[in-house]
Image (tube, rainbow, N blue to C red; front, top):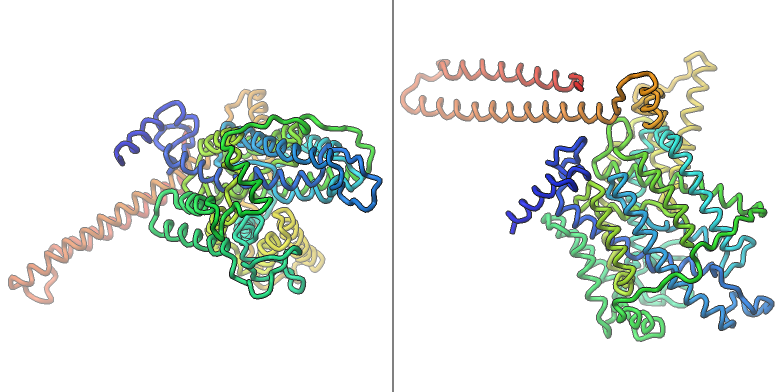
Length: 620
């Protein structure tokens, strides 16, 4: 079986598919080291299973906005939410099914775009947090705010168009590169804690942490009353919480023993157990809601065409509040998507030392285009999902994983009863495990200089506490500007006399200078080179060549070291044997002298190779 998969990976790498997605061994330009066909398939499946909750959760949240449904009982002040209007309630039921289809459809399309054009293993879907802001702040519960659902969708559509323009002219990428190095590193760790925080809550996790009136959050894992608080004496007695903990242990042990598909194994095992009725941890209890979910689950195969939300945009933007919402969508989505993309690129190992990653321009364009398309489907802004880290953990490195995820979202259009029934306590453990892996980036933060350490800490802390990647980034960048900007002005005013004693410990703001090569987008640089009659060289190709030379030099140095150590062992054995046969003690044997000469020669040769490899320039 192992030979079959090896042969399959080799054949796929040598095929046009392998060359397009730059699988290892394909010979493609800037191929992704460690990428294999079967690994990408498994990673895509893992990402989908981890993200599948968005199909039902997003539909549930956005349905609370009321969508285009009209309440005929709006004048009744005692019926807040229009629950006594049967036509409105029926409209909400159809709206929820519409949004299930719309969510799966836009997730399929946007993830496919990311895989095909950006070649990144990232899943996209309507963003959690953004959908809540859209529903409860902009439109309001059952349309209770001044902005209508259709007008809010128009604002989302315009946001996507603005994102396209910012991405085409490279402004969005350039703004991302302005983020200081310490903040970029801290973003990955902050997202790790954010993932963990999602995984321990009840909405998309195991329910270990919940609400508390006195301390905001507390340890729960309990049976909750109608207000969402723990019933007396039930703390840590929730069967679903313990099932989630069991799933976490399964995934952790499987990862410890390097079991392939460890995350997927844990999710599927807990999900299948939770589908049986009659247990204390079933996903389908014998209640009205549980019976309704089980009836939907039993359908297995079904397709609901969109009836109410397709193309429902109203561009009469004469309300000042809609412009506030548009600006909010804009800056929150910029920070959110930027943080996610760069953190996933670093986590996946395809970030270059200049702070950029392969396919960044295409990734931003795919994200921006998906936002506008999503508005046509009737859903809030689409964004890259941090749950993609689960697929990256399984080894996903190319867009082939995203294509697999997109295909599964397409299948979910017809099998939505199955894919919408993964319990949160089955997917929550995966988020906790992925979060624990992402937090390790804190080791690379410059904790020795306060001007770098405090902004990085705020970035990490505020992402989970504010439940927003964007707010964590804003806190980090803002505090970095205030602290280091104040130091800069004090140095100027004092003529350099007021300088922190440990200023030499401060890391560079960015690894690249502000030149046309890293400000202008690639297509503009190509156009300029064509006008000048010059050959365009992609900066990432130069970096890739430099890193290749460094890897080859390190490999040669390691090989020479192994040869040197093996030579030492051989000569030591020879010395022992010679001594055992009556050799004179204290005498310098010729073999030992030759060994020392070889040691110095090998050391000089290794240093020469490393130096020439690191400082060598790529040739084209």
